Length: 530
Image 1: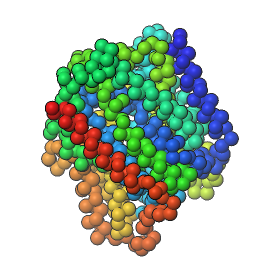
Image 2 (image 1 turned 180 degrees about the horizontal axis):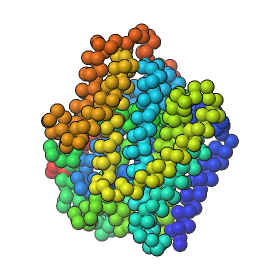
Image 3 (image 1 turned 90 degrees about the vertical axis):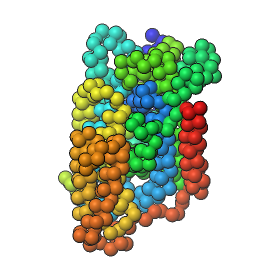
Image 4 (image 1 turned 60 degrees about the vertical axis):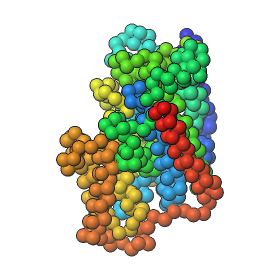
């Protein structure tokens, strides 16, 4: 009973604070609804970035991967910090110069309106098939395990999955569709504090349990018994070989943190260029601690339960159930629920933004007012939420939640990144070439996947396939630019950065983050290979 009360109390507190802070916000105009009226500070942006990214698909999926493959999977977190430095120093100043609301809108200047519309459609396809259903499904697993929903409601496990998916989807939809970006960002920041505390508590309690009351003894047991699980340097043929960090791993992270609408939209709502850069780099520093709560619990679960769990995605829920005191179940459930809502409502709000600005106003009704655009964006968000809630329960048939999610995303992510990056680096490539490259890249990666991760008959790790695909797309664009040159001048299409108002500490902190990435890898490799 106390668990249920603490869950309801914390969840209600977040909702009430978010409402009180945003009840007078202007949602009738696009800037107020889609960009929070450019009122977000660096700390709010940092909290929103972390919570948008961090949800149960990572807590469960990435820890599940760590249970099976060890610390090599931390690359998804640590290389992300590097990508965020790239965002703060290279991408964001260019976005800020354009004063945009969506990434496709940014590319309209570089290419044309049709490219913007195609990209908007591809972004939304990726969201529907990849991001939203995974957030809902992994969230349902977490909530079912914490509160034993099948027994509580007297239903089957399958039925409880449907119930939790729809409960999470409806709650998240209310935040995203009716609250706007500022409500999403504020609730993210509050939940972020709880998630940081709760997320760190699980590995601490896990190590204490392994050490029979001693945190250091628990860590010593892992170092002594399964040191290989601590080595982040993956060997050829393993889940993440070290060489893939320099191909598909870095590309997928740069796409996610620099061009993914559901992430970068938080920065578009910044008060200033300085606050935006500050928020991104604060989040990059926080990202370096990610392995403590997204990888270490999976390793602890392997030491505690052995290799006998029926499914790797049950490693984190099983550990939580084993070490979390009953008195804290409700609070931790509320924190997990907040993380789920954060990712779901952030992605859903970004989808509403893409549809409203790039599809509805961009294609269907160019003369639409701000109020009409916001209204249609909200309606589309409701439809999208229903589709995602209908698809999510079927993901349970897959083995390895996190790998499947990343692989599905790469089909569209890598080609999108290629045309954006080439568009920034050169003014020679035309809109026609960009469209050919985008569609060719998507088709090539899908074909290589169907052929068992082979490209032109050469079999390789899927992250290397993603890297090779990126190179092929870039070369194709440069070659075709000779055949179909741009008819616009360099000045018309150049995507220059904003240079005034940058954060003076940005480069120094960015350099420090990159050095820390190297040191973390070196330290854990030394432990794992000792």
